[in-house]
Image 1: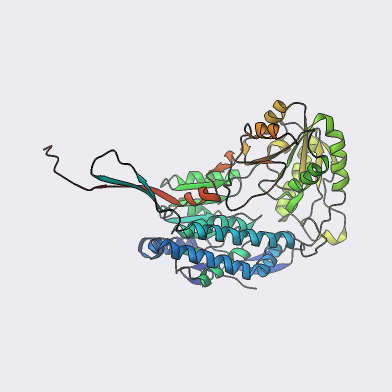
Image 2: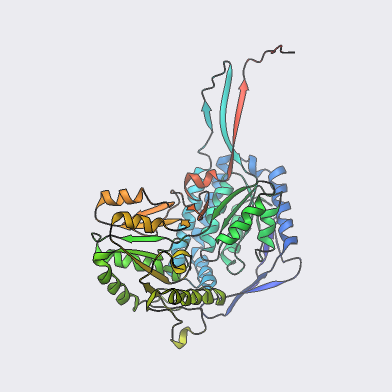
Length: 488
């Protein structure tokens, strides 16, 4: 199955003629061949987006018309969600059930921003100057470079594409080079929906060549990136060349706090889901479990017993609960973190290795892993391991729980488990995180903003705030009775 890039309304191969084979991480079988583009292709895409913004109709098309096209994209995603979900599972190894849920969420994102497109006519200001009118309006930023990760390829793309289109921007999107298939497919759907030539451009290739140029180019007005801290730092530095707007979501090391008064069985069940969902390859994974002393031992025992029964395997098998890690390189990274944890003195109580089942040997599988006797000085507690690896810490007071939870350079998300609503609200108000769940873990939706404090990034996606990221604010002042000043 051969796929192509999309530049200035045309499906094209890489100018250099190079291609990349996309493999299924479940068994390493090839599923598609895609172009392996570089700076030449990226520059062509930037030029097309620049031309479409500066001289095209999209930024000036009535907002209702833009919104209707975005709503049509949502309808097409719903129509083709079975195909999209299958592509996502082949690309990432996640379960088909999860991929189908993702497609519904993705359609909701386009539907939400399509509906918002014509809802902001600006704000009238009560001008203090006689005989004048004053208004604040929002206008599209311009050319937007968008770089998306491999763990939720199309979901993360939708968070960027939908608001950018709704506000009248033009786009160059670069998905992860190892999981591009659903982004290619949704680009086909955007073309079908009537997005004009040059408004959306898709480039494929390594970030060092394609993503770097997007961040550096003075013809790009905004860069939105979801990924790791080190790459985010490089993008931020590169973007300073023309002081372009930046939106960065850089992951997290998210605490999951369980107080003794929580519903025990529900908290156990949700703690497993928080960290082992999608093999832990989730930026908001609850990889740090903080348990109150009085229930610690019983809670750990229940976790271990449940963990023994997690089923690994092919994402297309309905009995499977977790698929593989994304790649051989990422598998080695997780294995290294286990070795680091043992060396640091954490106690490994389950997992920590590749499964022995022969059926799983061709894929990049790793057993669900739990460490106890951890503390916040350890690398496995502080660094984003991005795999099925749970660290457990104890606390004895509410104040200690808050202190431990905030003891991180990250601040993306966290959760609190308690049957005391006052306690939940009190703790939530003191956590330095962009999202705090009380008696739940992982829910997100298009209407609520997503993003982090501290090193988890800059800006917000989703919600009205996610729409505002793709606009510039302009003050328009009109003197309704101009007269000479006679100063000179």
